[in-house]
Amino acid sequence: MDSGVFFTTYQADMALRRTPLQKLRLALFILFVLVFPFIGNNYGVFLMNQIGIATIGALGLNLLVGYTGQISLGQGAFLAVGAYTAGVLVTKLGVPWYVTLLIAPLFTAFVGAVFGIPSLRLKGLYLAIATLAAQEIIIWIVTHWDSVTGGVHALVVPPPMLFGVPINRDRYFYWLIWGTVGFTALTIANLLRTHYGRAFVAIRDHDIAAEIMGIDIFKYKVLAFALSSFYVGLAGALIAHWRSIVTWERFTIDVSIVYLAMIIIGGLGSISGSLFGAAFMTLLPAVINNVGMAFKDVFPRLEEWIPYLQQALFGLIIILFLIVEPRGLHKFWQDLKNYFKLWPFSY
Figure 1 (cartoon, rainbow, N blue to C red):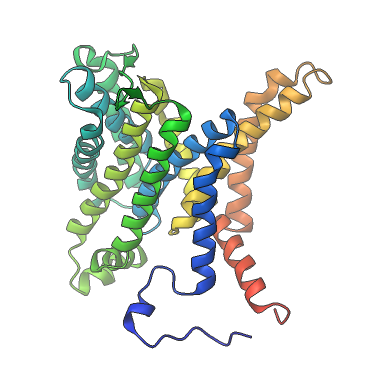
Figure 2 (cartoon, rainbow, N blue to C red):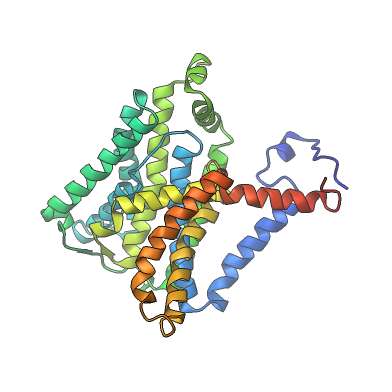
């Protein structure tokens, strides 16, 4: 029976996966991601692509909210910045699509840093209102800048080509999406191990104490907004190239709330929680729709109620998680691991 985890070198103590069981779980997850396109149907691959993009956006938001303690309701707008930047660069300027995967996140990071400046004086509900203003301002610019974004009309993005083959098909784009998920998770995990990550956590826990310790609050808050927006912009750019159509209706305040729900349900301040929350919030509507279709002959009006059921369950689940387990699905996962680690002496 394990009585602790002991290390004899600093390298072992600082490793991302420090025990054999952790390495085994990671290997099994990577194996599942690699095998799934070959065993899953088209609908399953489509859902996995949605989960992957949602995970990237949730990781970026969790870096800001979960690790730095800065509330944001502008996730949908920053997704729009990344998507429209990638789309405009390709359609208007002829920039190669793979180059836009770097330019769009960098521009989104700049926009996020600008809207993060009020975080020096604002916190809590007031900061949330400021980011909500960013949501409305950006969407207003998108819908009224007809000559660049197309306004309320959809911006059609040519499919990304690789060796003469369009790769925006679900099974092709799957590899790019989940490769980006791995890149995002790895970079954020390593960032949190640096003094930047420790500064973010110190600001989250108590910003006044962090400032007394010598941490430049303004610098790190704006940096958190910029880094978070970078990953969100990357998710937006992937949406533009995968779906080939960019429209403002995909980036409303509802999207911002859904992403906030992802990290609340998955677990604030957790990389794995971002994945859990993204998967949960992506699969929940799919399950409700499939159940509604299966019972539409038995309950003819059930199909009409599905949108209302989704909204009701959405709100109910958030309330239940806040009451029963505020730390989200990540805490359930931790409890499960601890149970089997100590079994049969779980007491």
